[in-house]
Length: 117
Length: 113
Image (cartoon, rainbow over all chains, first blue to last red):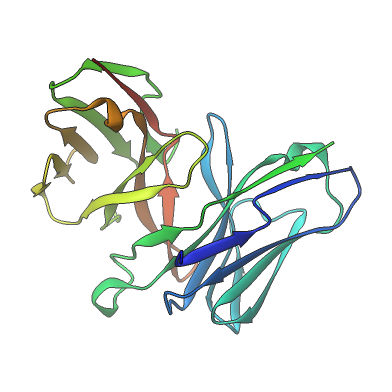
């Protein structure tokens, strides 16, 4: 089984709908992240969580919210989807190497392709 | 100026050649540097990371870091068609009390037989 799973893998929705993307991990990592990827723009951080009680905005959090239900689960919600939120969304997890933040390898889930019409 | 810059490519190399992928970054405080490979429509996979100046080798891959020049590169020896993918450079940034990864937009590599 994959260490980081995302559901759904593909979703088509309409403008104004509320959408939730879910991420689960079995790696035992405390840190979890949500990114979106758009052609030519690379990966951009939406939200990140360093433990269940610690959630922080990334560079593009407007229009999104998150919930960390447990160490292993981190959900991303689009409260009212709009077409420019059409993108590939990735969840990632990490565990600091050697107990420091200096080397913090991130492992990615398979992604969710979201289309907002 | 982007925090992490990569040439978008495509970089085209013949099979068996050395592919050289480059990345520059703006934050002099960055300590860790990562290379990910991403096949079209798939998730990024970690190739290797480096945090000390110099070279780090792992199989056919060599990462090179020069902090003075704020430059990190990835060399792929004996390139294979299966290496054709987008290669993402990522650099850690300490901001707001937290350490985060900043990704470049990626370089597309095409290895032709």
